[in-house]
Length: 62
Image: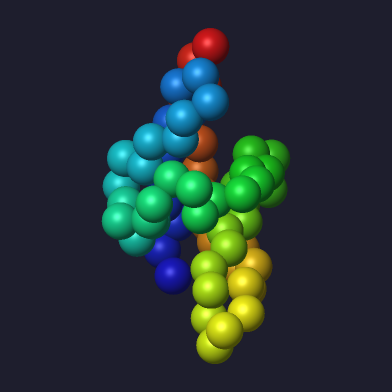
């Protein structure tokens, strides 16, 4: 999977490009900016599964 690029404005994540562009905001539960990873949860086969995907956060504003 390709790396997605995003920006954080306050407490909201905006996906600027990449495959996470269609992901709903509530599915991403954790972001590790240093390792460039985002953790998202989805229901799959009747259970909630956690996935890690590549995410580079370019800017963060308060």
